[in-house]
Length: 238
Image 1 (tube, rainbow, N blue to C red):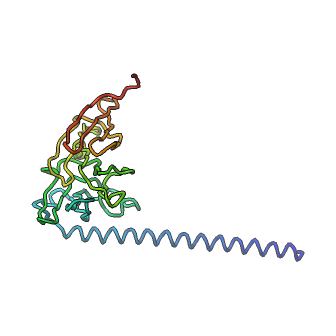
Image 2: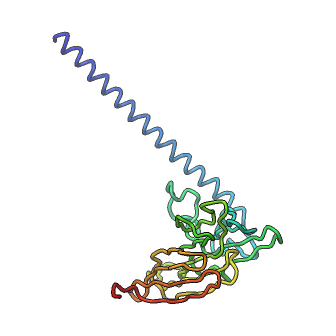
């Protein structure tokens, strides 16, 4: 074997060794990440199992968990979700929570709490705090402002029947709006089939897009009075 061939052979072996080492390091990092994720999930589960009763609700009866409390922008209220345990253990659900069954509000001045819904028999498919001035980005489960001067003025929620094994999928949903502190929940659309998003044009005007009877509809909502100005099927005709 010539010196040149021998040198090439040595470089190939070195490269293979580096690739093998890199693969082993990546594998170990993956195992470490899984262990950390599982450990965090287990710690949270142990802490949650210690909480069996909150604000008159027995968490053991329906296997529910209470999330951390979060501030609602510009108000003296906090909120936490009462949710089912997550069905999946992934990086996206490592907090251990599924969809909310209720929202618990806490007034920091009076130090009293109240629930959004009278019971936990529904699923909160999505919820959004509407802001004044309107936010520039939209997201569910978000009471935080885009800017320091923003104040939450209302809560838009999408409700669905809580499904159990054997229940049919696609059960009718409904849309409702409440005050930012979770009081005065008012239905605005019944028998809906899904929320398509919303656009808050002004403090007193929110366009809510949703599906009903297979058709896309738009509802013009005044969040300050929780009243719908109009509710019609989307049309491309003038």
